[in-house]
Image (tube, rainbow, N blue to C red):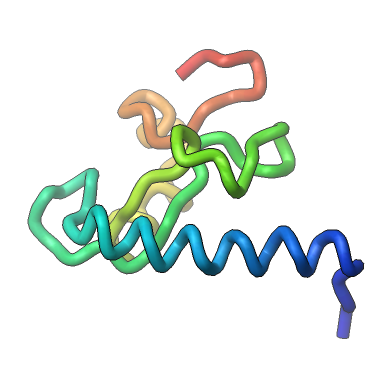
Length: 89
């Protein structure tokens, strides 16, 4: 099992609070506008320099839409649900 550093654990505690608030404030999926949002998706992934605490980098999605975004990266990028580190949509 991999352990987080104290710094990373503090960051993830902040993230859990933010996710709870976002899902309360934005309860409907931002992609399909039909289902209840259950996941908070990062438009620019952490691996590409995105922040897990920047609200402008986060979208509230239902599980099917979130799964679609992760399994269809080209189409999701074209729709604006994924971003590259260079800033292109």
